[in-house]
Image 1: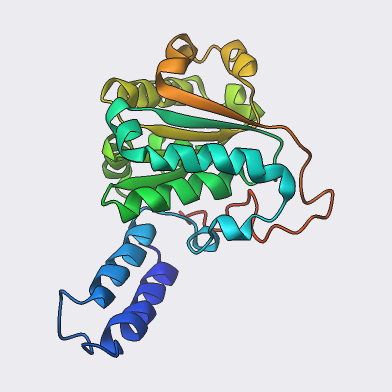
Image 2: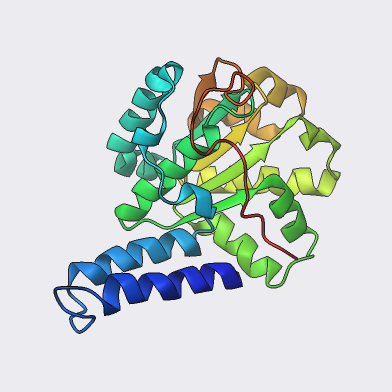
Length: 237
């Protein structure tokens, strides 16, 4: 856990638990402990800090409404989707809230007691190459959590080292075989994914519900959306 996250949790515990007006931290069955454990689960799941408190209300761009409805329907059936291993393939232009909506799904899963993990492609490449501490342990977590979000699978994917491609393919296919949903955010269409020789394409519709984001980057059109597809929480080596 990063030092910054550890500090955030310490401050949260003081404000939410130790200063709870109902129990002052003396009753582990109090709602303050439940609420704190939920916030703690976001940190443990590696959800970037700027996404941890976002809700649908923060997504004010009208073009997003049809997509939000699809995401809400997915969340409404999240227990069934977990059992079936049905994930999400969120693709389209950068800066259109794909990561935001993916994190909202993770946080809804956490509320229901499920385990989650957020990783970027770059972070995964570092894990596979063994550059980070406890790389194998973190890879095992990515392979076994209930919901895994792989963020920013971009067009540079095919330029990565072949063994990384193979590991990523094995990760997603293995999770699919174990009925563990994976959420992918990317600028690759389904056809472009197939062109990259990603073997998952052969069973794509068994593992993913594809949702296309058919509009321009909100940042370029200067529409206000709070937090977009940026990952300010990339882990330091």
